Amino acid sequence: MQVTYFGTYERRYPRNAQVISSLRRAGVEVDERHEPVWEGQEQKWGAGAAVIPRLALAQARLLLKPGAKGDAFLVGYPGHLDLPAARRAARGRPVVFNPLVSLADTLVGDRRRFRDGSVPARLLTAIDRRALRAADLVVADTEANATFFADLGGLPASRVEVCFVGAEERVFTPGWEPKEPFTAVFVGKLIPLHGVETILEAARLAPELQLRVIGSGQLDALLESRPPNVEWIRWVDYEELPSELHRAGCALGIFGTSEKAQRVIPNKAFQALASGAPLVTADTPAARELLVDGDSALLVPPGDPHALAEALKRIAHDAGLARRISERGLAVYRERASEEVLGRRWRSLIEALL
Image 1 (cartoon, one colour):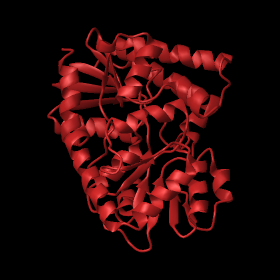
Image 2 (cartoon, rainbow, N blue to C red; image 1 turned 180 degrees about the vertical axis):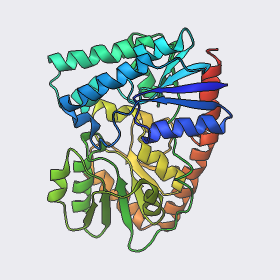
Image 3 (cartoon, one colour; image 1 turned 60 degrees about the vertical axis):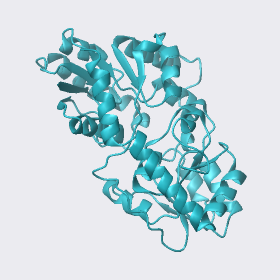
């Protein structure tokens, strides 16, 4: 079977790289039909009007390129504007959409770049719906997001399936050996979804513990007034992230309180599980699809710094608990979210359309 991975997707973004890697591992030939737009855009959702000419040129190139030979077309993330070109290139062959997010949900509900009900918000919702409805199959990252996408697009449940995000196993491999002093590590963009305020307040409530925040973004200003037990590193090369996770006392997931935060299991959670680092993250419907509190992760109420601080103290002072969560988290990853498992899942979803 041959699949054409299509569009203006961000080639290095973990969701795209992991899907391509998993498909190839499952014996699928993947041909990339890619027009770069987002490469080099660290904060792509803040790019504004400057990105419009690049998007327009990329869409023209996608439309003018000769058709690919794949049995099916898979539109990567972010690819909400790529569906018309994908349908034309596919010429009747199945088109699968891997949206990961809703544009309106991200830019209005989560990032708050636009007011709910404003003209931009309505336009983004229209783009979301058009993209979702144009695909023969939409693949969400959690059951919670699948329900959201089906409702947003007015789609029957049969047109929305689920495949976890997973982790790139060429990069993230087991090897957790925590170093002293105990350090909780957060890796990711500083955006509302991740609950940065909750992490910093938890650090203030547990001044005896060390935290390391790796990343930058919309909420950089919060880190400027961070407590003294929080180290801030703006950037670490992607290939160096496993080393950070391997020596961490635990890895932090997300703690935001938005509706979107309730529906996602982020890249960082899967990367921590694949690396064997004990994971502490918010107790959400999405997290419960994969994780069990006290077994494969420590789950705390979203937006609750007191609960997070207590969880960090608990895992910092109980080496047996930390080791058990490390081992069970890795086992759950291997059982349900490894490249081998997800490759079979992606292949079966596409084969069902042929």
